[in-house]
Length: 255
Image 1 (cartoon, helix red, strand yellow):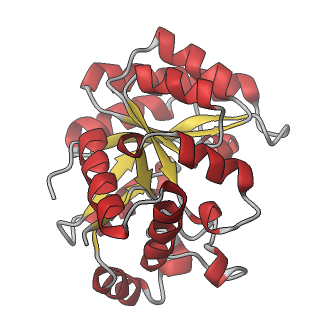
Image 2 (cartoon, helix red, strand yellow):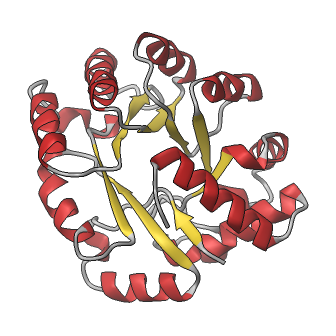
């Protein structure tokens, strides 16, 4: 089975002491692709350098809404230059996070729309972070019709999913799917077509049930695969193949 982790933050310093070991174990567990989205300007250089070490690591460049206090409005200009001088597979991780009321909503919207415009200009898909803001994000996508991408850690409604699909988006499912108590999320995964789903870990966050309380890792993606296969009543081989095909289609990967 060939698996793609469509969302992991292997560049974070929590992996500095054993990153190569994590990659080795992940590859032994069937992973053939790692998508690593950026979160802030200061990490773009090190992220690019990391991904240039291996053909199976792919990076996206963007300004994450949770780090809004670290972003300046001129960082989008820097992002445009960085994208022009490198080869990211997507603009990301970008979006809106209205769950944390301390995050500046107006500044989030300005930066998000500017990054959507950039994605439109350069013809790249986007990797979306959305919390308590699906309607607002869908509204922005109407104004800035990007070519598609992935809604990371999707937990919206089926009706919202249908609207995202009209804009050519896939939906990321990961560690939370492994918890039986995640009944709403598991029901959503059952209702969505397998052709619309990609697998992810969001490492080092959102750890699978089997390693609850510990650092999450791409090597645990098979646990997400198993849970998705169970709720879809499909074989793990079928789900692995289809989700990898979906990831390649969403992000123009060739694996």
